[in-house]
Length: 248
Ligand code: NAP
Image (tube, rainbow, N blue to C red):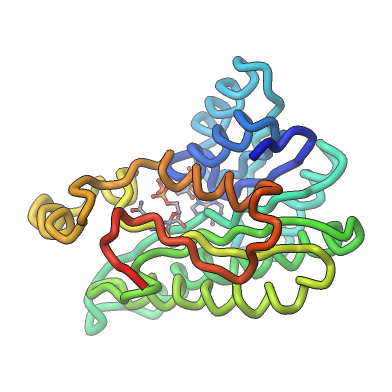
């Protein structure tokens, strides 16, 4: 599970699950680029936390849904740390509302960040990974992409799309020793879920066999495993981290 000498880019690494992933990969020995779009202070705090423990990290601004910015994230990662071994497509947003009220801009924004952003970053990362004949791409999907979630048609579509994308890309690049997997978190305590109504949270909790919400670190452990040599024969899979809320 050791990641010594590896270089990772975590999109949306400034807060929540991405932050926990960045800290976990660094703890295992990777040099980590922490991407953010607005939260510069938060990203700098993650860098400081990693450096404070003797690790190496770098904060990098960029909107994953914009092709030139996604390309720049990969270019700057390679420039800063010499290569890219691990790409974690974690950046994500929600714009929840019922379908009848869902505007085209709500639909586009969620698809653009969650799905197109992952395509753009993966496409840019593939060039150095193909050249190096190895790499790990880990896409953060969601239980909403596996089971669907009312009020989240845009988000569920994006996260289900990521699962198809993961499987297709895994088939394409397997011969080059690049693995592509998805992690599908359930209900994880972050800024994204803090805004949900108490009544909704209670209903969700009732459906979790392990009787607790997940922590960002629960997801980070799964990502760190998939990024490691221990997972070298695993590709095209969806690893659910959901306390048993959905079982496939
Ligand atoms: P969060 O706390 O809201 O953090 C989102 C992160 O994404 C932030 O670092 C944010 O950067 C970044 N981001 C947003 N739009 C971006 C863009 N266009 N380009 C680059 N970065 C962008 O969310 P979270 O709960 O940690 O979720 C992380 C991932 O897990 C998402 O893909 C989410 O869909 C997925 N997920 C979460 C849950 C859950 O229960 N929380 C469940 C299933 C799946 P700034 O700080 O700059 O805004």
